Structure formats: C-alpha cells, structure tokens
Image (cartoon, rainbow, N blue to C red; front, top):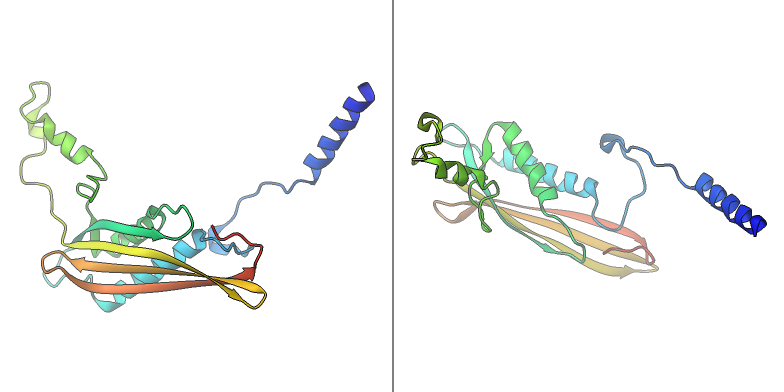
Length: 200
C-alpha cells in the first residue's frame, strides 16, 4: 500500500514538473500561436482599424468645435462563440476619447444606463440629508449626437485539408439628428488552420 502511494506521488510530481509554466504575455509583442477563435489580438486590430478610419474620414470632426457625444447601441454577436462585445467597443471608446474628438455617454443605453449613478445621484434632490449645492441640477445630462452599432459575423469553410474561419466586424456610426450613417467600416479577420482546431 505504501509503495503504491509513493508511486502515485512520484507520478504526480513528474506530471507537475513537465507542465508548461504559467507566464505573462506582452500584448504588444505576442508572437504566440494563433487561435481559430477570436482573441484579444483580433479585437485590438478591429478597434484600431475602425478608429483610424473614422478619424481619417473626418466623420468625428465636429464643425461646431468641441467633441461629439456618442452612445453605444447594439453590437450583435453572430458567431459560434460567446463574445462579450465590450471587448471591442471599450477599445474604440478609449481611442476616440484620447483623440479629443468624442466622449461616450454612460447615462443612456438600449438596456438602460451603463452607469446608473447618473440618475441615482439626481434622486438626492430635495433630500434634507444632502447639501443641495452639490446635487446635480435639472437639465445637466448631455444627450448623444452619435450612435455606434454593429455586428460580428463568423463563416466557416473547408479549404482543401484545412478549415478557414472568417470573421467580419461591421460597424456603423449614426448621426442621431438625421438618422444617417456618417461612417461605416468592416474589418475582415481570416484564419486558416487544422480541421481539428475548434472555432467555437
């Protein structure tokens, strides 16, 4: 019995010793294997392409000066993966904010406010427990000028003895005053690899 226990412990030690060690990955210099699924590099590329094209097109240049206010509408995930589309939109929002041309409102959204505190803070009006000089007044929230919407598509194909997975990140920027799309873009991400690789 003792010999068997020692053999099991020895086997576990060998397996643990052979396991690949955990390590940090530098996103700016990641030359690791490419997954057939979408990974952070794909979202980075799609967001960078979109923002660079928006800025180059002049779509976010406000002729009245100042910055446009953008709201994030629905980004539909039409892939076989469970994708949090915030991975894409957050990168776009950060880059547009840093450009000095666009700010994003978090006080309104299709499913309610992203940050509910904007409205909660206004519920403090007329409360005797709060100094009213610091409470937000009426008519101070800013309505959005622009809306960002889009879709992420996935198409799988057999290419000889391999599979090809195509992702299309499609985005539209709509002027809410006119309802017209003032910018549209599509970033294709095409991957080809083993038929055994999982793409969902």
